Image (tube, rainbow, N blue to C red):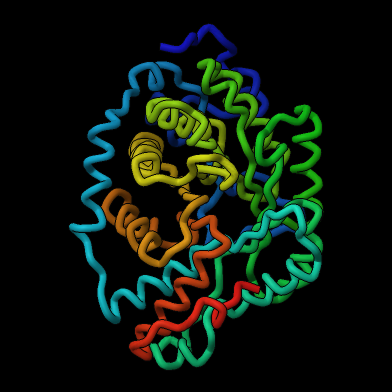
Length: 363
């Protein structure tokens, strides 16, 4: 078992003025998620759940946590075969998947023009003629957010003005999380000040690999404070955490520290979102909900590029957490190419023919 002789996170707990959830009285005294102050020029996206105020760090919970990799792999291997969504139901599920996409561009050659075109696609993610043929022309089909680097936040905010689509920004030294800590905090504050209403931060993998759970708790708590006015998604970079037990513990610590979403990957690791990892994380979300009463969202990211994969992830969410976690308020896909394949599948549904990929450009 990793060494737990580290900071317990009490300093971060004291800063946020939280009370232990150990008793019913404490449960009733917990601050509401709406108590987090929101600057006058920032509003939470209406589809998102209220902020997760977090709890004190509970090391005993972590010490008793184990994940059986073989069992997780057997469970997730059964998903594609046991659950099959066909015909009009498949089209409906795929349209739901569109509304859960954080449409993303995180490339070194991003330009304001590219981001502007991506925002145009975000407003109208599926061609109008396809929506009409599918009987969905009256539905508000838009992506959940547009995710960019902090430097591109002002461009995205301007391009999405009036659409209701929030802008998300990666921050805190994305993707490696190896920049100096004060700079990571400043990057978060800069993104929020520029108009980002969702912040995707990366944790320090070192804290997980060395079992320094108190340090991880304090780190995420500091990010939570810096991101006031925005929802916080914590990227735990599962492909670099060595074991599923570490994935589970990191997920819990981030939720204890006030994360609103837990996210699998940056998309830059060698191994990104996998179903066993997803199962491990969503079961911690379920345990968190049962123990504290708070809902936390989940975001798989990296390597999800086909409509078939999206359907399997939606099945996982429905079976493990229920229909509420199939909506953008609690579930997101971090993706750049997924939308194009979904649009192709919807065209196949209405015409019976597959179109060429270039007929459905991303931006």
